[in-house]
Amino acid sequence: MSRLSHVGEDGRAAMIDVTGKAPTDRKATAAGWLKCKPETLALVRAGTTPKGAVIQTAELAGTMAAKRTADLIPLCHPLPLTKVSVTIGLDDELPGFRIAAEVRTHAPTGVEMEALTAASVAGLTLFDMLKAVDRTMEIGGIQVTSKTGGKSGGW
Image 1: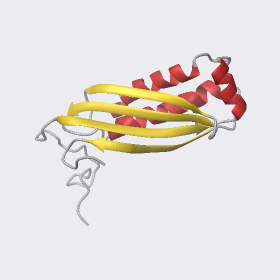
Image 2: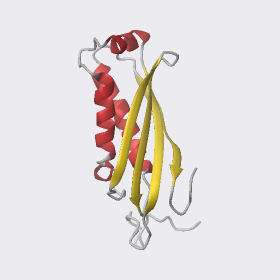
Image 3: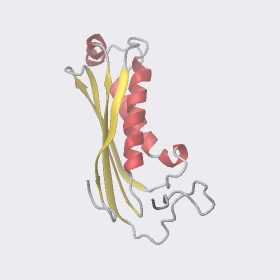
């Protein structure tokens, strides 16, 4: 088995050196969901939740979180993000919310972790905003849905 790239010669975790890598345009998208009671969706749809603008607050929290990813995940590089977009939609069939995040940069390393962080924190914020009315909620499905740019290309 080859050495892991995040392990130094001394066996300790180490940040990858991207000094020599050329910056390229990079994009990653991530998704997730929050399941809740149908009654909870009805409250959000009617705008009558106790904590106010649930979706807008969660979308903003996801955007802010993407910008702080390197502060949360020890080996992530701080990146100059050129775009962060978090959108949350109501899904009656789930029932709950569908979360989508898109992050872009022009840098020597990718933004998958930033997209995952945005989707995760948006879900956590939805939970926080709605826990007073629904304690049965479940967050899940957090995953990278696409990635472009860099040496490995898109997937």
